[in-house]
Length: 325
Image (cartoon, rainbow, N blue to C red):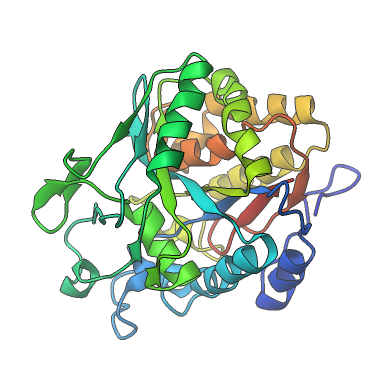
């Protein structure tokens, strides 16, 4: 829902509004939209009795908050409307430099619990899914054909540190935490392949990469990109719309204004301009520009130059989805 006459877009914030927005997405299984969505945090899976020490953030990002409720509506809506043959997901929590890495985990995707010091229950979470070796290899070839370095990774290669005390492979928490809510704890019917984000790329090169994955949308593949516009762990107030600073709210507003620009080239310019702005430093995961984890996850979706804006929801502290059709 774009704003008019220079006004900020009016976006769905409650279940009635976002269900209406989901219903209004085009039923185009021959060209599935690509989506950015708020992937939340481990707070989504907190025991419902454990909310101490997290302030207002738990109200929005906890198991009973609007983000969890939205994700439970979002996943079934995607499956019902598009019946995807597979899901390709870009997570803000997997950044590589100089190459794209694609999971090739075979008959069951392992989980990388890349979060530390949480309740024991969070290390017993389940999400059973499978990969698709043919799709993984195809993605690598598509990237290589476009002149980019890419490779697959298997269960034998560690992706990073796991909060259970070892290094290992797997879908990171930016994928399996929200996917458990979107698709259930056992989701074997539709394969999932995760792709890393190359943090060394400029906005221009990220945009150009859209032609690599865009063609998969015509082949029944659902493309998802997860992150949060605001992810400052040193300022938990930024996770709540009620307590976020004006800096955070202004940044959130400026991003939403940029992504709702109707013209593709003008939207590209508006999006790219944010990769060098100083306002982002107070709002996001890291002061590094443009190699920001959750910001880069957001940027990944918007490299589909032929897309048109379709629908969006609040992204600072609550539920979020933005579609490209």
